[in-house]
Length: 307
Image 1 (cartoon, one colour):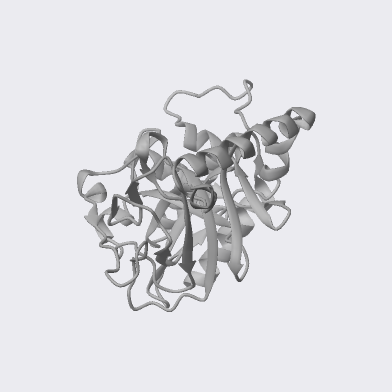
Image 2: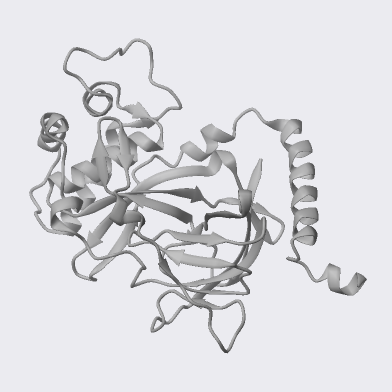
C-alpha cells in the first residue's frame, strides 16, 4: 500500500524520510526514554499561515512536497534529514522532540512543503553517556567483528570506510533468519547476525552499525522512517514495504548528525519481488483514497471551486 506521496520542488528527492530516532538498546529492542519524547511546541509564523520554522536561521537549498496520512488525527511526520522549515501545513498542534521527531495533530491527511539542506539538524547534540552506550552482553561480538576490520587509519573517515567495507564484503540482505542457525547458549540475535549468519533485514544492519560505531567511539543513534526510490510520473510514491532503519552518526568535523545506511542496496529489489498486477490494482485504490481524503480534509483547492 502507498503511504506517502512526494514531489520534488527544488533539488532532488531525499533518499530517506525520518520519523523517529532512538538511542537506548536493551535486549532486542530500541527504546525512547521519557526525556527523549519531551515534545516542545513549535509556533506558527504569525506573518505566514501554515509556516513553521524548525531551525529559524538555517538556509534551506532543497524543497519537496509531501502528502501523508495522520491516522486518528495525530502522528509523526516523515521528514528529510536537515529539515529546517515547513510550509503550507495544516496543523492544530505541532511539536518537536530532542531526538528530531516532529509530532503533528491535525486533519487525517496533510500535504505540505518541507525545506531542507545539508548541515544542522533538529536533533540534540550528542550525549556521551547515552550515545556511546553499548550493552555489556553485546560487547564480545562487537569486539570480535571489529578485530576482523582493517582499522589502521584511526580517523573518523577511515573508521567509517572500514565499516562500510566490512558490511559490503561479508553480509547480505534477507527478510528472515535461516532455521539452520538457531541461537546458541549465551548468544544474542545480534551476535548471531554479526558472527555466524551474516544476513538479515535492515533492523539488524542498523542495530549492528550503531553499536559498532559506539564501540569505535563514534556517537550514534538508531533511526527509522522510509526510503524514497520509486518514481511515478513526476512524483515519488512510498509504500509500506519501504519502511527502513539506518544509523545516525555524529560528524565531529561538521558538528552535526549525518545519515549512514549499511543495509545492502539489494534490499529494495528483494522487497519488491512478486507483486505484479495486484500492486497495480492496489495503487489505483491507494491513489483514489488519497485524493478523496485530501478533498475531505480540505487539502485540495477543489472544495473551494465547488463551493
